[in-house]
Length: 259
Ligand SMILES: C[S@@+](CC[C@H](N)C(=O)[O-])C[C@H]1O[C@@H](n2cnc3c(N)ncnc32)[C@H](O)[C@@H]1O
Image (tube, rainbow, N blue to C red; front, top):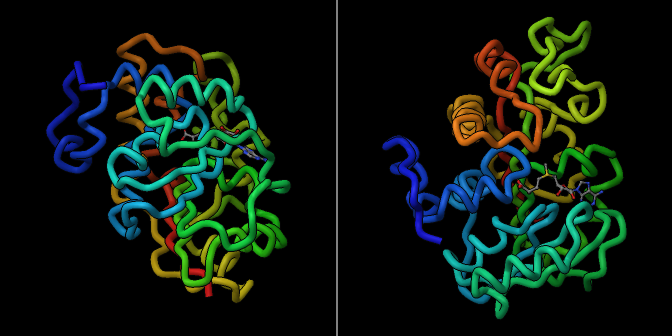
């Protein structure tokens, strides 16, 4: 899994752990802004100790789960809905991590775990799909032990869109549809929105809630890498990100501790 293609120096110095992994492997298993970069970013503010039980919620193709197990020697329950557990199991075995990454196929509102089982929960580019309901955190947090940490990174907004969606987000992208697709994008919110949304429950203490540094640039940079390599599985988001220049789009990070 050693890296065969060089990324820029700024990526290598910001993400030294992720930079050890093969870019082609990341692209093959890509489902959004680079999952390893975002996991590494989150882990800079999250304490993971060897042997901890970690839930990687909405893990997609489980590359973040493999990364967590390899780099932090934790046990990871790689849980996802769209990707079958058997698909992830294949990838986990290929990476040699079958002793510490366990694939689970589950819907986020019907999780097959014991309450207070996990020492930490992470969710990369996923929580916005199921976690924007006012009732969700109360359900979800019961799987985390008291004082455990919940870390989230989601695509988000630097200012809320309350009226008309800005024109540059409605322009067609590769594949024909606009970036602002009238479904998923309405679950994008600002750090202030997420702070209120999570803290009003009084179930967690918010430790960090911010837009990650140069989030839109990282997102764009990853789109450009995929474009250069001819990866066309998902619509190209680079045009919208380039036009937006971080005015609206970015990546929002949450670190919260269960009370
Ligand atoms: C954009 S993908 C990101 C996947 C991965 N974390 C990554 O960054 O590559 C969003 C993931 O959220 C998961 N997801 C969305 N809704 C879900 C739900 N209701 N229950 C469980 N997982 C869900 C999907 O299965 C999908 O893999």
